[in-house]
Length: 295
Image 1 (cartoon, rainbow, N blue to C red):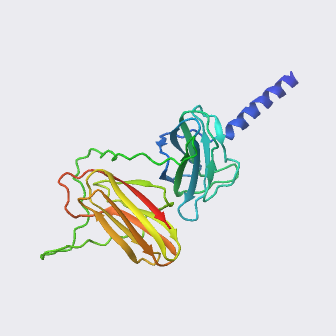
Image 2: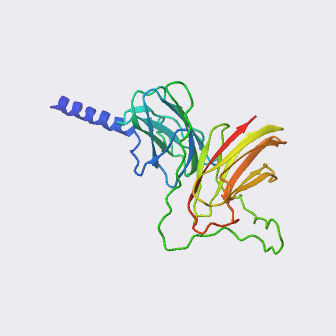
């Protein structure tokens, strides 16, 4: 009897130990695409956040995470369509920049990416982070994101919020644009030749920021495309010391490509925001794609 009880407790202990190594299957999963960058935020300790991605056999999925700021640490895990563990980082300390490479996958369907701000060692804190989702197809080629449709506009009785009014102007010519403050904007790193997608809503007044590291006298090729919607979008390139090196707007146009020289080394910010020129009569949520190449 004593031996039977001991064996039973041992089996239960091993089972519970195995369960403890697997992060909880988070609710409200967010679908992501190959070739995109997504932003998440931990708002409480020991939180699991789940993302799903559909791939086919022969694909590889590589994910690079990065905390915004210096006080957040987190880790990543990757599971197959039936929750078979492929990559597990729960036995590592939380990191400001966790990443993984899946290897060549055998299954088709919805795979799961888990981000969690704790490990077997310690809690990692709370805060904002980004995930860059890279895929390699069965022929060894990078997979880019499909065009993004505009997100649905929530049905609400409130009228759309227009951008700040431009200065009063009674002459003939360009009325100018109001200033845009980037001091509180969370910034997502841009990787050369990797497109990112974003969206601006009529009610939100979003300002989206993207950063890139450049050498002195680097050449920057920028492609800025409105994928859906009708809001007018502004784009600006700022240096680390807050100098404007480029500014443009998509008003009646839907795409723009330009090449410019970045004279100083450092971190540049590419900002996208709504502008109030030739306002549409029925504003719609607007999706865009931004592609940068540094040479």
